[in-house]
Image (cartoon, rainbow, N blue to C red; front, side, top):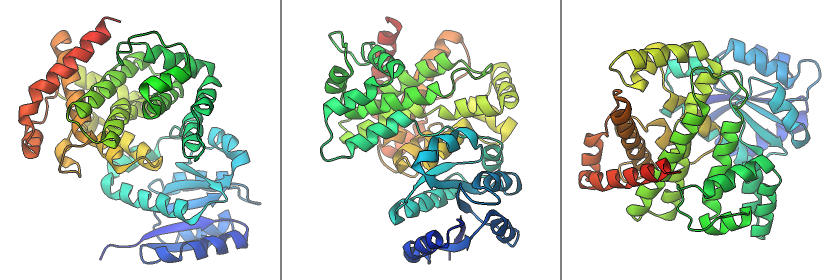
Length: 406
């Protein structure tokens, strides 16, 4: 029988804890639930045994939620740390608190809490290596889910969602609007006429593609201005855009379901987000990784495992899982170098992301003479797709040639 995971809820208001206790009744067989009225009481409970998740209110008398989660980060770095507080204080919390992995807004419904706990449990099984947990524990702040993307998602979930409102949301951020229009007019999307407004961009590319672009641009923007000596932000963005476009094109060529096509694009765009996190938070180790990779006939993920014991793919999947992305996207990001490890046994965003990334890297290695990983032919054979490989290579070459012309 699988051992139950232990979660600790902390809030100074007993009525809040009582409400959570009632909401979580159906989870009793899956989670061992504990409750504390203060940070001090929470730390005493944590001393009595190993916990998996802590969910803490931020505004408490005595020891604040900030102080509690900072203590948990130091003493129990393996734990998933979730902040629970009012929306009015979200921005202040996310800007000032390093140890928060995820933020839940009060009032929080039972399904949101349950889904968050289920994801954290799945995450520990999927990405449960000690080396990954050790690296994550050293990261002060994982990037927050971009606000503009969240606002778009909220608008699109409304029954009366409108194109005009979506255009208004994008237009509020001049830098974002400019970047989206620049991308829409690039060769990536093959638009035959110049696009001058966000509304026109949405009509031409569709809401899902625009959402993906907004998400990716905002994630990269979070790292602008930081000292990233071991990585080129522009180079990584260009690579991510190409892989995202190729991944989507391969999915469309295979006449995949619309959801698979959309997820293929998002996974391709975000497949290397873990590199940003590592370069920003453990720059010395990341510099060593790049040197080992450049100086030796070794793959980049093998260099990562030699130096830090985990990979950018696993770190990126960890982040996306905490953000609540679908399993197919988390899987694609987490195993894009090692698709045989993935959970799906059929054509999926993992397939397209792996293929797109490997072929793009193959073409780059031809130009610079550097050793590159190869497409996992054992994986393609297992899926019965080896005969599709040359056609996919042609798709990728065409997109890369178009990109080179811009």
